[in-house]
Length: 205
Image (cartoon, rainbow, N blue to C red):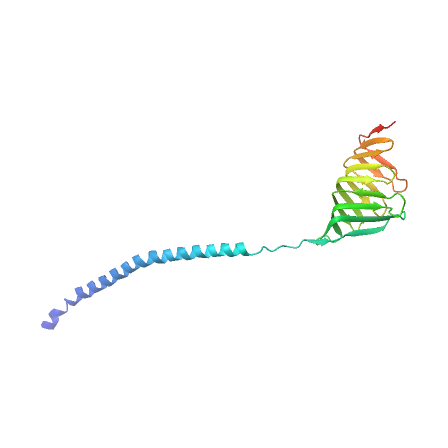
């Protein structure tokens, strides 16, 4: 009878201990979870700060898209036997279109071996070594070496044939006066200038 009576008293004791253990775990979690979240936030903030500092110190990679040319010169002879020489203050060859050379402050001399060579200057130019066509743009100036001067905004020179043309206006000065037009062509054989579009002339007496 004594052993049978002692069994019911052990159950409340066991339930109380389990409740105490659960309470202790809950208290631990209530303290540990906020601390863990705080540590995680601090770690993330430190990671992003360090990444930003390292990114600022890294030197950006430069993709080489041009090949610089020092002292660039292009020369040859036109169909009539006259020589041509193209020079520039700066030149760069694109690695995507290797036959094209971009010129800064280009200078073209035609017939340098003659007594009166023609000279052309501009701010910019593009020379295609395959087609041998030179395109000048920006304050193009032409001096034929015989007192005739031309100012225009563009000029296309075919160094094979010697033909010169333009579509962005034309102002010519010479001993006889001044002439203006919208476009022009220069004949290779005769040197005659053909002007088109609103041609206006002023003759000096």
